[in-house]
Image (cartoon, rainbow, N blue to C red; front, side, top):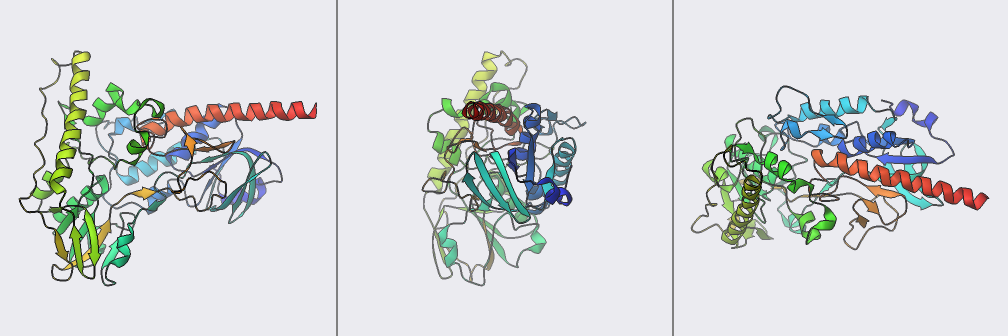
Amino acid sequence: MNSTASFNNQQANRFINALVIGAGQAGLSMSHCLTKQGVEHVILERGEVANAWKTERWDSLRLLSPNWQTRLADYSYIGEDPDGFMSCAEYISYLESYADGLQSPIHTGVEVQQVSSMQNGYRVITNLGEWRCRTLVIATGACGKPYIPRLAETLPDDICSLTPKDYRNPQRLSSGGVLIVGASASGLQLASELARSGRRVILATGEQVRMPRTYRGRDIQWWLDQSGLLADRYDEVEDLERLRRLPSAQLVGTGEGDNLDLNTLQDEGVEVVGRLAFIHNDTLQFSGCLANLCKMADLKMRRLLKLVDAFIEQQDYRHEVPAPDVPEDLRVPESPRLELNLQRENIGTVMWATGFRPDYSWLKVPVLDARGRLEHDGGVVSSPGLYVLGLPFMRRRNSQFIDGVGKDAEELSEHLAMYLEQQLHVNQSAIA
C-alpha cells in the first residue's frame, strides 16, 4: 500500500486511465474490481484508509449488520463469530487488511480541492499537486457532511449544538440534559447510550424505519438477504427517490439480539416527542403528529414482516422456524410534550441526528441538480467517464451498505472498462 511519499514521483504529465477518490469501503472495492478488469488506476484519500471510521465515529459504535454480512468485493468475514457485530476498531482493521492486499497505489493525506472537465477526461487538483485522468470514480460516500436544519441557527448560544460525527461518549458532553433530533439508527443508539449513562434524554422523532433485530429465530438481516429484498434494483422499484431518502433502520448491533425502538427507549427513561418544528429563544415547539408517525412506522414494519412470512411459506421454512413474533405496537404518551424550555428543563446539548449529505463542493463539473445531488443512472454520472459509488439505493437497496458496495463496484468497473475501450477505438479511428 503506497503512501504520500511517492505521490510527486508518481504523478506525470499524462492521463492515467482511472482515478478513485476515497479509500473507504467503496473506493477499496472499486480498486479491487478495476484491477480485475486490468484498468490502471490510483486512489486518493484525504486522510488515511478508513478515515471516516477512524475520525468520525463514537467510541461504542458497532456495525448494524452481522459479521457474516461483512462482504466486500472478493473479501468476506472468515472469523469465528459470524453472528456477532464488529466494533469500529475491528472494522477498521478489516478495511486495512483489504487495502493491504490491493495492487494499486493508495495515496493518503491527499485532499482533492477541485475536479474539472478537460478534453478526454478530468483534471484533479489536490493539496499536493495535479492529476489528469480519463475516468474518475467518486467514492467519498453519502455521509460527507451532516445535514443540520436551518432552525438550528436560532438555538441560544449557550446550548451545545453538535452532530453524531462530533460525539464520542457521554463524559465529553456539556452538563445537563440532551435533546436528540432524529430517530434513525444513530439517533436511537445515542439516546439509549446517554440514558443508560444517567443523562436525561428527550428524543424528537420524524419518519421512522422500524425493524426488529430478530424475527422468527433469525436476524432480520438474514431474512432480508435470503429473500432477495436487499438486492432489489433501482430500475425495478416504484418511487425510487423516496426510497433513497429513507432514514436508516432502527437497529443496534449486539450479541444478545436486542431490539431498538421507541418502546425500548421509553423503558430506559427517554422522553419521546414529535418532530421539532420551531425554535424561539429558549423555547422549542414540537409537532402533534407523534401518534401518526408511530402508526406509520408500525404499519410499514408489519408489511415488511409479512413479506418475510411469505418468503418462509414459499421456501417451506415454516416447520423449521418459530411462529411469527411481531413486536408490540409503539407506545405513545397520552399527551406528548409540544413545548420545551431549554433553560427551565436544564437541557445543555442538542444533537442533530438528522442525516447526512454527500459533499461535492470541490466538483466543478455540471452534473449536480438544483438540490446539489449528483445526476446519475445507477452510478453512471451524466458526464462521460464519471462514476459514483456508495450512495443510498444507487443500484440496489443495499448499495450504501458494506454488503452491497462490492457488487455495485463489479458492475461499474465493467462499465468503466468498456468506456475506456470504446474511447481507445475512437482515438485510433481518428488517427487513422
